[in-house]
Image 1: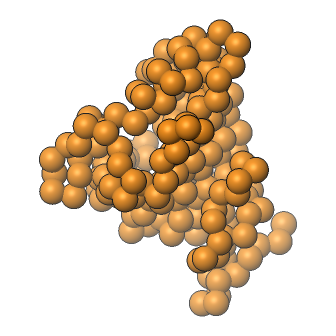
Image 2 (image 1 turned 30 degrees about the vertical axis):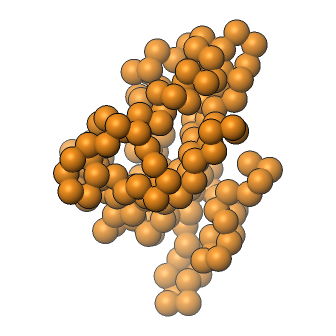
Length: 170
């Protein structure tokens, strides 16, 4: 396996996590729920009612009790209501790259909710990618998903400043 190298000599070991959930709700209903931010506090600790472009939200995560991410920060980079897409750039002290794209597509008698996450946390990347798969799958189950599929693989995307993480074809 060929790995990319940063100018500093560090390896780029990004991985991609995809979670697809099928729901009975319409795509519009699901997207409305996805845009609610009741559980995500803002920078000052107050909670906000809806996700907003440019909004910054904080959360705490713990990977099976071993790794605690106390200041995991998510910045909403893009919201497209017409296409039902939300993209965020997430950071944490231990995580170099965490890009998340949520896309909800209509389907016969319901909708498909797709989460795509690209993660680079150096040597911890494989562990955090599997943790992300576990957490996002759990979130889908709390939302009464009918069926859920998960995939984890090496990301072959060029991750460079100035390039969009997700392309129009995604």
